[in-house]
Image (cartoon, rainbow, N blue to C red):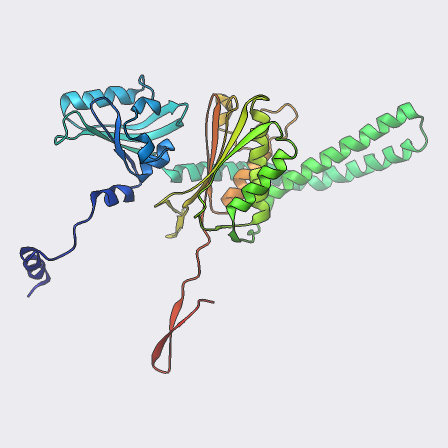
Length: 389
């Protein structure tokens, strides 16, 4: 009997694969799927939809879509058109912007549900994560091109500065108090320039970082304590952690530097009164990214967000935010976020930012440290389990 005949016989007998719950299928999809009733209230949404709006299905049920997408958005008009024509509609690279969602670029499909009058299903696919990774590689390339020049000139710059500093120290011993202030200023400024060159040189370091299992909550907790005991005394911290998360595959010291950078920037951005920073961790199912030039696919399921209620990032800086020397601070060097982008890329992760007035979110996704899988070996004709080395 052929395999096709056997399958047909099983179907006649009621056998074959068991029925699969539709919710399991929806939750397996990487696109956000949202079902709305005739009043544009949320009926249901899948797990990707929960990630998109930042709320659970239980919370969103019965709430109006306008809580996340403004009523004057093109999405609302497309929903009404789909109801009237009873036909599916699509739009690509549609920009959605709201206080809760930030700014998102999505591919949108809207389909009426014939079995449920006036109900529609929305499918929203965010802009390709591969595009975001490509953009971040561009940031790294920009950083390296600048710092390659810095590395080449470091010798030429540091040697004269050392001579200038030494001469200033000698002068300081033979001048009066008024002139000693000027010689001290020369020493301080030469030290500052040397420190800046040293910070730039870190971008040209191509050595692979040492990585291992890291508890991301311990990293975040340390950064929060440092902030609250110093530069973030005026800030209220809100922690929304998923305690069941596995360890991150990373370098603990570098991750502490990354999140200290982000938390310090957030502390400086929030208002002096009612300033708030929210730290969130979550697990993103099905988050896989293809690596350019290979068949390898990165699994990036662990997400950390740093959100503040500051004034937002100026629109003219958002596209170049992670490039060197881009800063909104008067005395800033513009190397902090460039360092963050490079370090996250070295970890095999991705960083994104959404910013509107009173809501800026940095989203970082990381690979997890998976347990070594046991391997089966044969010994004297029998199969035995042995831990992977």
